[in-house]
Length: 280
Image (tube, rainbow, N blue to C red):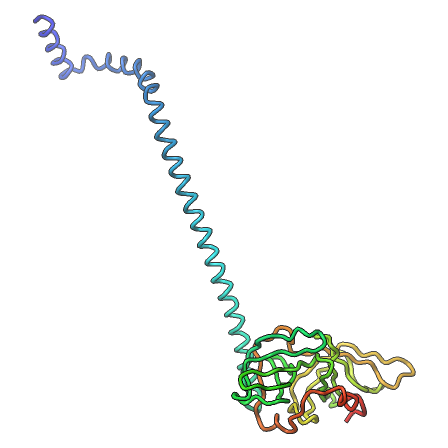
């Protein structure tokens, strides 16, 4: 009973006066290392679990972001392609507005693999009004002419084809000649240009309209080289087509009556010597 009475007295004094608080703080300081040692394994396990969970979540989020980034990149590439296509369509629209005749818009389907001929297929045929010999242009200038026309597709012979010839004239002074395909996509040869002719690098060649196929005034090529050797009657003149023969996918086919004049097909091997003869 004495001990019970002492306990009650100490509890009452501690509750009112806080007499045992210093002793409790001292004992807590002594016991803290033991408590920390006992809690260390549990705390370490909890931290490792949190870190592993966070790392796994971050890896999953990172993987999801990578996949989403790939999807967005694919969409951006498609948007870039659509933007370029829209630009080409706007260029074609602007070009067709500048023409005096109506045009048919066609798209490139495939390219012939024969290295000796420069033929491409388009997705418009006779049902759409396409006919052999019809002039074909892109947004920059003349590309070639229709070689054969089926009901729903047609074959186009490009300017660079070795069997193709087109009457042209120098836009600066009206000098007439014939531009011949060489088999090289970026080069045309001008036939029988006199050595003393007024022609120079940078001259723009336009269709002269004398071949009964191409109406007059369409850009064809730009002169890039003029070589006149002593003793030679004719100069060696090379030109580069202004049309993007290897890039354009949207094409224009001239449908006006002026394009149907003679319905001339591309120059054959028999017709080519005439093109290389006397210049009109």
